[in-house]
Length: 272
Length: 307
Ligand SMILES: Nc1ncnc2c1ncn2[C@@H]1O[C@H](COP(=O)(O)OP(=O)(O)OP(=O)(O)O)[C@@H](O)[C@H]1O
Ligand SMILES: [Mg+2]
Image (cartoon, rainbow over all chains, first blue to last red; front, top):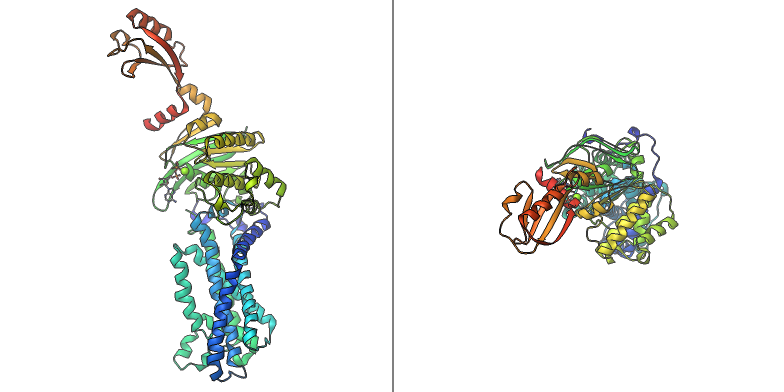
């Protein structure tokens, strides 16, 4: 028996039923953990977003022109939401699976009749729920500071949900691979923060001179923020085509799913 | 009786290169209490964790109640409960929540009445709303047992269940294990308290350095390997074993105050009669005598050392 057969996938097993109660248990557990610290969980993104609005939206924004016919204050709303969702998704999801690994309570998940897909549904589902809630809360907070209109609600929600799920998956992978708490913090700080800041959270990449403008197109976050902005304000505020944005998020989602599938298939880092 | 767990040629080499288990084959019978004994690092936990799906198998197969633990892992795992050796618990969860969580995780519909029964049986009902971190070590271990029982397993693994549990509670736990067995649960336990195995087990397996060196009915084992000893309390201490006792397996202990004769309790002729006669002839005076049978612990120690 080779290691790659460690956790069998549904296709290789017989007589299996989908463990809905198992998913529910994980989901509830994760949400309960969040509700215990709901105040601070929501407060910190709301506070940081408010600060950004005060500094960039009001103080600096008042001296900036409009982008298309979108005021600068409104222009940064989608970027700020993405900024928070990306960091919150990665940190929530990575913590959710790293904690049981660290505390040893993961033994129970490993000994339970829970498939890879079910575990991911529970953990990533819960983390993504939190991210979406945080996104909505920021959306509401932003309304206090600026007047904005969402042109295309369905696409906006689609991006919100897809981004949350993708980055929660990414966080989940990080939580599985990390072998220390520092690593959990370093990746968001060293990779995510630069990518989001340079990905057009606070500006349109058309404002950049070459070669930065072309280089920026290699930053995947550009496509997310641009697509999200498209949903708010239409093509005038978007940096890249909406189709490109949707493809980018789909590809990222697919890559993360493949990685998670591989991790569970091999038991990598989860089992000895 | 047919085996409820069938372990065939299962071995384990950890990534670090440690060969924790040589190929082991073992059948556990339905409804029995099986005690797995062995010194620290022998491979007991490794074998249990492989059966429960926590550690990958390096070779071999394990079938639990007719389900291959890899191919039919869902069916197999639903039937198995595990109380691991280490106390891994969440800190902030309430007792009742963590036990309810376990039941759900194993794919079972909620059943508050059953959870209440489990908690009451383990004297945890009063503590059901306490956070786990507020509990003592022994209570935490009982929470782990409650979690393992939450999905009504047919097979229960107890990896050192009595570590850190006080005397009274240990007796309660033995009682609980017996009741579980009565209700048809098969129990596999490891322990370093040999008297625990002696007290409860139907069969005993001894692992040493990754090898299963013996599997035997406990009573057969004790009969087979059991030595009996006859101790004479001497009226006056002597310096050396009298020459006239050369043919007998005799030791002088307690600074010459006791003479100990070892014999095989199962032999047709234990030799006691001849021995006592010889003692009389030699004029050795004794004020008292008693016999004792070696315990499982003695047997265990001699087994592990002779290998
Ligand atoms: N995760 C691991 N990685 C590498 N080696 C391990 C791991 N777990 C256990 N071992 C090694 O495997 C061997 C068997 O360990 P195991 O925990 O199965 O022993 P045990 O019989 O349960 O001992 P104890 O009575 O101390 O609990 C030991 O040499 C141990 O060091
Ligand atoms: Mg052990």
